Image (cartoon, rainbow, N blue to C red; front, side, top):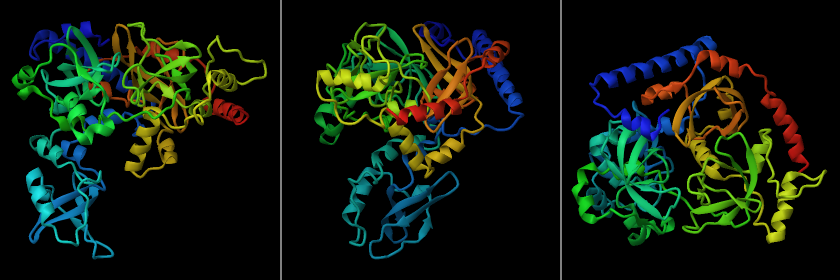
Length: 497
């Protein structure tokens, strides 16, 4: 269990006897788990390379974290500077096409990483003197973020997660009240999984959580025009001062680390109908969108009928955002054969479907906002972008999970978080059904859920995994209805709804 309290006791010197014993225990537990997986799979490698995307991205070299395929960059040549579009981006090869508008086809050219101009002022000068044959818009989203590359200059060959050091500072937007932002201090960095402290509280967050921001983000919300499409109404909690920030300048996490953490507006009207998972991901409920009390364009509340979904710690309504892994479209769940519950306060006739009963309840409050949303949450947005970036179809992604039998899952509870061993019991294009040791019910999560990891991730992060071979085998041998049969039944049912 990596709870705040237990982990704080383990903050010891790397050379201390306690630290060495802890490291050995962690390695032993993970080795036992990995050996079990290898034997169970007859030492055949699992696929599933589309899961664990946060973890994989955290291990990307900084230069490839910033430079992507189809990005336009300015490079130095013997005849002067010219813009090129990157076509092949990899550790062994960097190829691009010249952006010459006078040619029908620009040939593919190999370039050196060092030829890319990384100084913002030099790029600005070169853009002013480019020949007319180069017509580019440096404000285009396809034009590279020169300042990110410049800031990352001394980290280019480091993995992104390793840029964040213990003691470093960044801004953390409180999920329980997203109008408040605190300066968070990094106590531990387990390959991108961060133990942070703000005020008197400690919490585990992943470095790519959209609520993590670079220092200065709060001020940019109100002062920078180019931030306005994404600007939120936020303020610092007590303890922030310009003098304090100046005193920790060498401890501030470089802003390029959070370059992909931008929060987008949810654009879900009030009364939009969707589904929400409970905290354990083994029960799903029909719900609808209610206007949040702050930052309404970015956050929203959910109701199960007439009841707000509330935070068990604070007793207040939960602030959901568009990337929350607990929200789903009903169609995605029904196609996966997952039953969706209806709150007991909503009447449902004997021959009436639950989805229709919920819609009738909503119509009494006012018109339902449009059709049921098919792509919401981090799932739709993130996985579509992920697949498009690699030019891989959803069908290919599905095939890539066919021999995926075991994964690791980060499970959370009021006492902390724990990486757990899990068996994959079934999957479809979007959803995965798993069984975890010591849990009676199967759990259902989106294949791109950031809390699903490939086998070996806990070892990568230096944290122990919950795994007891005898109990694990006993638990996974319990029979359950094959997911493909469930899929067929509920797909037929869904067609009549």
